[in-house]
Each structure stands twice: as C-alpha cells, then as structure tokens.
Length: 288
Image (cartoon, rainbow, N blue to C red; front, top):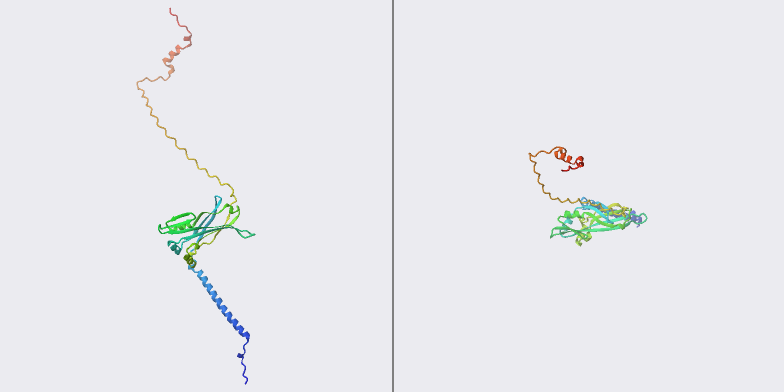
C-alpha cells in the first residue's frame, strides 16, 4: 500500500544552509558583544578616578642657555613620591631618575635630523646608619636630612651641558624635548615585576617640547669684564702734634705808649739834620 507523502519528508538542502548560516551569525554576534563588553570594562578601569590619580611627573620649565662654547639646559619638574616608593626607599632600595633630552631639526626633503640625544641619571638612596638621604649624579654626592629637600634638588636641573657648539648651526631653529622618568630597569628583579602590575611605580612625565633658535653671534668675542672700581687710597698717617709755644709775657701797664707816628720822633730829626747835604758839604772847622 502506498503511503501518503507528507511535506515534512522533503528536506531542501538550501534550508539547511540557511540554518547553519544563521547559527554562525548568532555565535559571531554574541562573540562581538562579549568583546565589546570586555573592551568597555577595560576603558572604564583606565578612566576610573582611582587610576587617573596615578602619580605623574609634571615638567614646569625648560630652556637652553649658551655658556662657554656650550649649551646648558635648565629644567624644573614637580612630583610627589608615592607611598610605595617611599617605603621601598626607606628599606634600602635605591631609586634612579633619568632625565632625557633630544634635539631635532626638521627637514622637508628627508627624515628629521637628530643631532643630540642624551640622558642623565640621578640616584636617590637612604642611609639607615646616618639617617640621611643621598643624591648622586655623576661625581657629585650630596647628603640631605629630609626626603623633601632631596626631592627638591632632583626636581631642579641646572647647568647641564647637553651639547657643544659644533653640534648645531648658528641661526637654525631646532625642536627640543625633555622629560623625566623613574628608571625601572635599574631596580632589583622582584621590584621590576611588581612595578609592571602597580601603577604607582610607573612614574614619568610627558615630553616638554619647545623651539630653540641658535644665536648667530656665537663667533663674537665675549664682552670684556667690567673693571672693578679702584679702592680708595689709605688715609694719611696723622702727624705728631707740635709742642705748644710759650705765650709772650703781657706788657706792663706802666710802660709808655709808643708814638703813633715814628717819623716825627726826636731821633729821626737828629739823624736827618746830621745827614743833610749842607752838613755834609761844609768843611770841618780848623782848630787854632
């Protein structure tokens, strides 16, 4: 007996393809939704107020000055040492702060020229025996009784000779960049691993950028120093006082007063009569 055919007995291959495609699209959409949710969660963690308050170094000043055939950098930074770093410092772990400086000259026909790329490392340590903080840079070592004073010295970069006169061209403009960061590569290995997972250890500043134009009068001789004013002459030595002369004796009151006109006195009249021309010409009388 022939059975009656039903529509459910017919399976069209195209319907199965559509069913498989729909299931794949559904799984893909679910995976995309989960990926978007994970990405949103990651962004929320990065933008969380607690994470945004991570310690950051701020570059507040940067300039270049020409001194003694060389160029010196003056820069200022501002930051607070996080509690985790301060605790590690007091336990004997030295912290290394690196200051990086770059000088770039743009060129339209080729890659930018970078004549200067230098850095300087400052070491901060604590001596438990003397209870002093020590800052070391190059051959200079300075002790500080307080951590705040040591940090203030580190935050101020002054007189750092970053490049010489031959590295730049007079009259050219350059792009200068400077920044400071905590060098994690010089920490002990356990602390390096901890620094990767802790934001407080990632202490760094953004690049402080400014434009510097090299002066054109570098070949001019330096101005002669202003002569110092001559010192005043020493005072003359004081002469010894001369002995006082004795006072003349007073004229007695009984002495006769001198004549007001000495030409009419009796003595002058006698001399005038004796020396008169008539008396001189007359011959002397002959005695008998």
